[in-house]
Image (cartoon, rainbow over all chains, first blue to last red; front, top):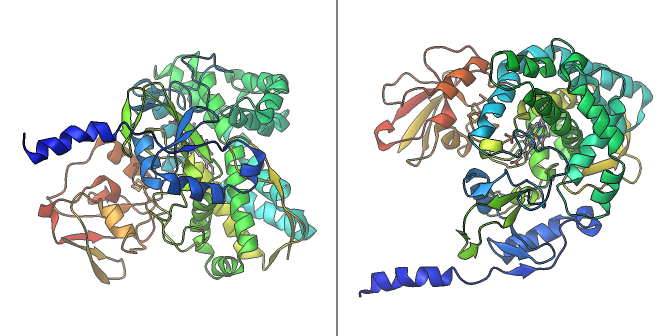
Length: 408
Length: 103
Ligand code: HEM
Ligand code: FES
């Protein structure tokens, strides 16, 4: 036996070493308050970590997060993208036809959504979204003292997105609590999740009802999803579930994305000045805020086979937690990752995921972000934080509940 | 290997790229502002639109064809998505024309 064969023979042995273990809780309030030092700690522990608190594996470096996102055959979504393993536990609601499915089943439903949320659709929506963004900023300028979250980051998407889907105006106050519930439910059975589930029934009843064809305006995204039943792409039973995907994933996420951008621009004067000087950087300022804050912090996958990551074996049937927020600030991939820089190319960040499940609504999110930040840049001369920002807590989403601002 | 990016204003920039890289990645990693690549090469955004007239390119896939309908600037028979073209050694010296707008 020669030396080369000897080396290969020892490779599987090396793969038997267990990964570094951490007992920290990635779903605790302390962590949510300031996740960045822990992200750094986890990245430095190694390419793969074992989290003993939940008996799960985790990846926090860009390269491994990217790899897991792109290998859907090994790291599947159909056993749930939260902590709960659908092969062992009954999901709290019927699984999503896109988020919680694998190809090829996933692709059929996804194609319906990606066609509706295409660049061509964005060209058509742009004018009305722009007018709404300008109205909103004018209205807030007249008030001067505002809450950057409730009056702006929430109010703007709420003024355009439900109309774009075509849901009736009554009852829209259920939308954010429903989304909060869905994103809390990806986490463990902690207080956040349990409390959300305890209060869930009116929100679930509302959303289930809005997904029905007769409740949706004839021109919105919802009606277009139902129209895909007529062409045979999806069944009549599937259509309401796809509308549900948009109602779940399309609002709270953009609220936190826009909130992240406003919070960053309010804190970093040089970046606000750069945006004022070149309002056409609005879209890049939004994108960079998604990288910088990662409004969607985490998702899980489940392994379909034994697989090696960073020299360690992850057994079949394991949950793997991807820290998107940690990957988006990994110094192994980004230069000056902790700096919010609207002039950098944020291309390749995983704030919208990557691969087959990459956010199907990313163009809507960017359109909203670009237009509201562009309107602010053109109309507002100064933004000042006037009180203590209050954090919102959720098992998946990162953002603020309140951000007192003065704008002039 | 080299690729040349031509701006609509007529200026030219030659960059060094690696085989296997996409044209989009070659541009964004070299600070070519005329290509945005918002979706990171996942064929979902059409902000890596380029014009190339060169028969060394691979054929258009159905997904690329469909997404090209959504480009910000006019689609012509030379339109391609930079993220869908992986560079090969034979493409050395490729000349890529940038559109005026990507959004
Ligand atoms: C800033 C705003 C947003 C962020 C940060 C965000 C983030 C994400 C992420 C990280 C994923 C990947 C999930 C995975 O890999 O398991 C995803 C998927 C998804 N997003 Fe978004 N999203 C945003 C806005 C939207 C909007 C506006 C919509 C609807 C119009 C939407 C609908 C969806 C859907 C349906 C999926 C599942 C796609 C699939 O599994 O194929 N999202 N999003
Ligand atoms: S980078 Fe998005 S389509 Fe090419």
